[in-house]
Length: 89
Image (cartoon, one colour):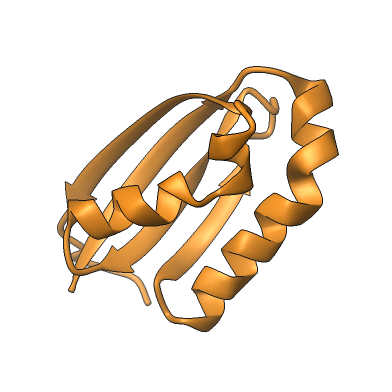
C-alpha cells in the first residue's frame, strides 16, 4: 500500500453545499474500508485535501471518479501525488 495526497479545488460553493451530503457519504464509506486516511476543506473553502492509502494511483483515480463532487462538477481541479510517509500515525 502507498499513500496518496489529492489536492482539489472547488468550482462552485452552491454546488458544493448541494452535493456535500453525498460526497461525505462517499468519504465515510472509503474511511470504513480503510482506503481514506483523512479529508477536509481548506480554511478558505477554495478546495481541500484527501489522503488515501491505496495500492496504486489507478485505485485512487477510480475512487475519485465515483465521488459525487467529481460527478457533479464540484471539483475544478484534481491533483494526485504519491508520497512517502516518514512520520505520523
